[in-house]
Length: 355
Image (cartoon, rainbow, N blue to C red; front, top):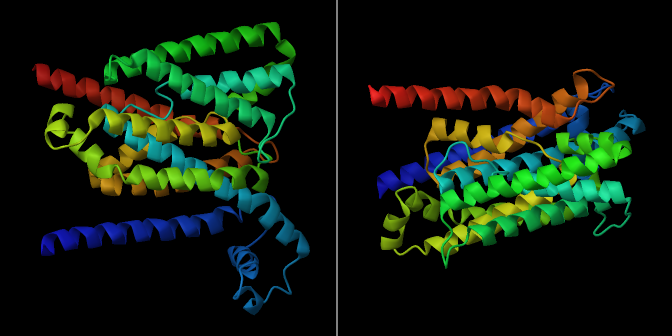
């Protein structure tokens, strides 16, 4: 019992440290930009808006323009980056555990292709509708992502089971089909190509509270629910038959995790566009550092994913300022070499096994 208590204590300490680092990162990255705003000013501006304690902060010497920049531009963008990074990393960790594949990511079942096609159709059609302050493009991307997920699921379902290999292959096939349809639409609607390409590269440009608020509660709730399945994911790592013998309803767990992950990915992709490699590299790095226990892997991936995302977004908006680079390009620059590293490592392990 003492050993178990010690493990739980160490886990809590690690999560607390990561949470503190996340808060510090939010304050630091919110200060970086064209306008020269210090970390202390940023902290004072944010605290001044908090109930009860805000009136005790001296903000008389802070220019009004700094309030506008922090509260209306940088802070919502940074918080949105944290939310997107946390969601994609959590989904990546869950999928890698469920598929028992370190190369699985949030888009492995065709979610990105469905979202891209949905967004493309809205951009080309010029529809202008809104729901919960989300733009028509965001709504189209969300619907496309969810539709592609359900298509993949029903194609993969054999009787009452969904074999993992079949799910992966169906995801690849449906994803390629949706990508081909999107490419065809781009060929016949050349005037909208730039808009579609920019969306598929992923960006937080011009994103604010209107994009952040509608998805915050659903995404945070989904992350919390996903963590409740950490024990099931741990047992499923030993094999589905072993998990069934321990009383876990494997197919129900797989379906629930699939729906939660698809919903969460669709929510964040609908506002950020396609941002790759976050859900691939962050969970894998965390797994290498702390091991495969999903009780610590899932929350740690969420926290580190949020930190890494706002780091990448800060590079994206400052590296060639005032021009902004889509954040998906920055994450790909980090993620692609890491993906090649995984492939080479797997190749080396294979040849070592052969020998």
